[in-house]
Length: 287
Length: 300
Image (tube, chains in turn blue, orange):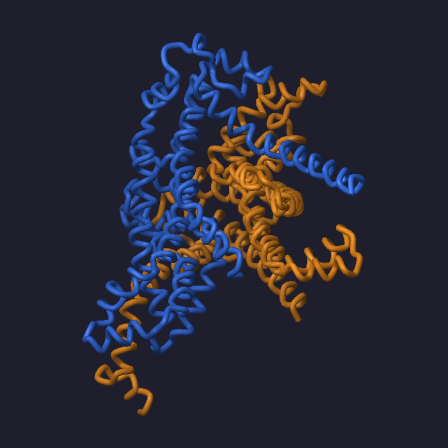
């Protein structure tokens, strides 16, 4: 028995060492970012040669406050405004997107009407159009509508989402019909049935779509870059790029801004992990 | 006559059709105006000399834009760079993601910690990661050169060298994205029934054989899905070079989408940029179709 156990143990140790090494590789940039956001630039460079790069500053090394960089970052550029813009942009898309796409998914799952399968095929076909290949004509369109540097211009083009429609349709296909039949007998209208009965019972799919939309659009770069070029309309991602190139470049302040920009995603990941992973699983199984 | 009657508004079917369209119409209209129309417009612009600053004068110039692409050295370089990035990122990222998934799938006490650690870069946006790694790659006082120095490796130029810039972007991209595919692979691994492994044990298969004959076949569909999505995402490369290198040095990291953006948005030459966008779209569609055919053949 002892002879059997030993190789298993060494194997296990080897596994832990490998996995810990990989964990260090995946984590060290993040740790460095957060720790550097608490230090002055001189100290960032001084600490870089040792393990201190990944440790918080000693109390006696702190000049004023641990959050000096954060205060300065919010003073030098309009970080607060950028974050608000990103929130308005993503939440706007989520609210309108959930309504419009869930309705479309419900129509395609439940009703018989002429050309239904044709529209379904069209919607699925639009999935392969890369957004990168239409951003120029879309910009021209939004420009002609007078929507450049407006929330309307940011939000409206991305409300309808073929992938979300598809997810909703799949969910509603599996939804038991009996409830709707019962409501119909009680004299409920179709619209009433949908908003009073279907929607409240479909929280998981709404949560999943909301999170997928949030992640996609919080991280959006190209569209906000072209359509929101005024400083007051910049989203956080565009604001970060702008801040990074604002002389004098202060590493600690940029690190503070990067950390701030990551917090919302981190919160979603920590508190809504279940839906997040479900969203992932959906993306994985559908194609 | 009969069909017309069926959809008359007074019948039950007619009412249902009307409600159906009521629910579907908002999405259809939005998709039509903001997706299909721009797609058609891109196609139309690509045959014109449309220039944003004089929108009134759009002249039809037939295939001139497309002929120009053939002679455009910058386009060729952007195309080569994009291919290079795609050909390296796709296999490396899939291999790393699969390796991580296999490790994390082991029954270990700390596996949730390891899984979270490998996944954590996915939580950051590409912009955040690109800025962070620009600092890390700094040739004079960057974190990576300092760490290499501890191993006795001389400082590298990274993003400032035409030979290393794209490779540096590739390393960062794999680091950022692999955790995402790891999660998808992990779901696939957990769907492989245990009895297949037990049967292989009875047949006396070793770990490598089990991987080859049980794990890999069990992951086939998921691998194909991951392969397609990574390839297309890689082909759309934009954020990393735009933030880290502005396409340089010497255009060595200029990607197709970046080139289209510059021509269309900075130089305002919408006609020519649209022609390149059409070529880009055709390329993405070709990749999708080839891979779909491969998938079908594999399944058939």
